[in-house]
Image (cartoon, rainbow, N blue to C red):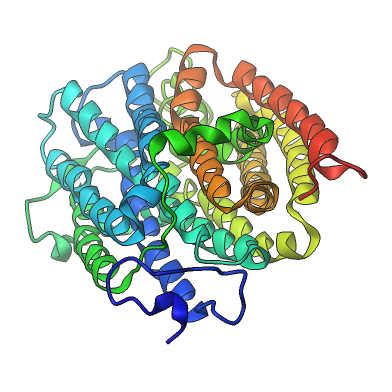
Length: 463
């Protein structure tokens, strides 16, 4: 046993991952895998509402399009607020307590959604509360990632943080991918009966929507138990006032803008992808479903209204895989160059998607072309956002000293977690086309910042 881990209690006596002789790599990797498992469950809890909300009206609720956008946006608002709390917890609580208790807290909102989808009787305010509580899963990110960074040397932090964040981000696509299959398995419905799901242009279906929530609760309990029994805490101590010294460093603010571009885009589109698809090319577009004011037939004979749940998981999946797949490249080549590539890719892919945000309903062929254009454009946006998520998390440990790097990771993640809320508000009040042009302008600004501050030859803070 190394000197670093000689203490039998929760807190290690000393820990210097830059010292290869004393660094306990087995403890570091064990911490990574346990916290990554718990972080994946946190993202599942955070984005569970995004898999349920688009189907609430099909289950018997009667919410307006605006109400559904606000409900889908609420987990992003709460996650951003709660990340401001979780970002200061690692030095105060330590990894063990923070991860285990946070994972237990995930049960509350998950259980609530499982109960409330069974009958369309919950008032709007109650579902908004459940959506807010789901944000605990998003808040966890700003505590889990900094605490894991303490365990690894700088030369490995790009890979370690990329793996944790990338696999954790997979929780988004996991919940969105598996929900359609889970709700079809009556044998899993130990608690509660079935529901009838009504979708325009399709036959009614018998479903057990509570499965989409209840199946994750045993895993959350297991994750909390693993964290409590197997994790340690690094002796990095700082009170809240001391941790706020990161705000005196200008790079905290530049990296915040860059991470809004990458993770803000990833999380915002992950939460709104299903609703946006339905409202443009599915049952939410009255021109398609109602036949432009005629009888309730499809406007174009032969056009199949897309079922969003069959596609919505693809975007978060591509973004999450890109995050951990490109992380080793950021360790070898540096993060700044890949942040630059991410920004340029986002400019092109967002601009290229904008024409598909106004569906052409003149013919079935035009609708099909428009939908494919929209889908592939969105997937490209997710790809470049995922690359940027990996590269920015490589940059931060290189730019800041260890404790500050953890704080900056938590802070930038907190602000970017408002993505689902901002995307919901923007799409609801501005409309898709103006909001996407704002995204192009933001990416142009971030490319300029990256080149000037981090990527050019002689840059003040290459990383």
